[in-house]
Length: 233
Length: 207
Image 1 (tube, rainbow over the protein chains, first blue to last red):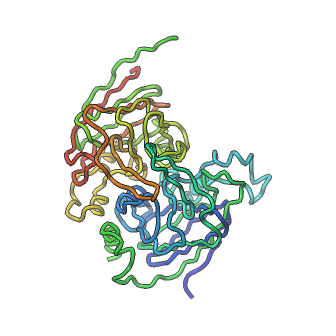
Image 2: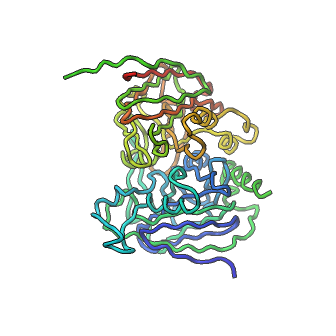
Image 3: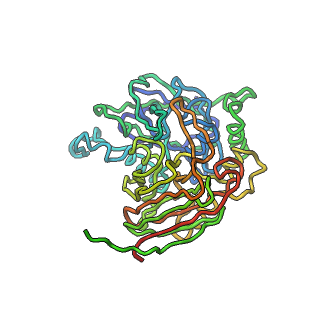
């Protein structure tokens, strides 16, 4: 038996090392999910670089078959499939300030339903791997979509009603990664507190073939995948 | 109203491909002049008392509800503290999602033949070291004078600068900050007009 399934409830955080060549399928367990996701490479110093990922692939969002690139130009993972064509990566993860509108919350009062921000959850996860606040970086907010207005400021805002329970995104790890994620509400959400959870299914990926969509997406995508291949060479 | 006189305490030129680390006290004003035009100035900000409290491009974008930076943009940290505010801007808009060039990202974008060209990350690391700023402390930066338009369809492009000779941008520090600058050496795209040039830094604060 290979692979495993794990469910992360809404309002929680999780981290797990995942080996190269795995398919990681995230399935939203509710509408308007937001899974703020960080990625680290094998040495835990090299990490996801959202600006480099965007400029190399000329996109303002994450979608299949884009490659998620690191500071060192390594493909950490490829987005091999998704039921959504836009995953936000411009608005970051939420902090405690974004939960203030829900009023005070604590473990003493709310037990395990206490409200914790993505920032708090991500730092908590990082610290158990010997990392910390310095290692935070721009997240991909899986399942979230922002609308960008074609005006002089590049006005943007969160769109709701786009992602639904059952929506999926599948990442293929290209190197050994540390996946760190939080399921707190999107920081621009104005909805009542009901963050969706996410199910994570990890399976062994099929060998990459010459017609692989990520390898064939752009020259830049292929070059990042080549850097990942060299790490394993 | 009492006016506090502030002397010009900084007037220096940063050559193409060089950098600077400048401590600006709270209330201090730093102007970056695009002397020759179309020159990207890659910039990171840090709380001078705690470098883990550093500029955050995405928090800044989200809280202002807009992608581009200009006069009035509050430059926020990862802890949502205001590090500085853009107080004046004769260019009009600046990028903060295009990132800095690195040897590795140059390889991704242009191919292996550019592997050993000078890049912003080396400058950031060289000038940041004195303040303990290493690879882990490099967040996503501001590109003053650079034009990276995005659109409603989710496209992103690198276009020739909207800047011109003599245009400048000014920030006022909201607390004591470190400003880490790399005057971009990129030769392979139009962000420096294909010919990186020097910029001038002017500072006003009580020394």
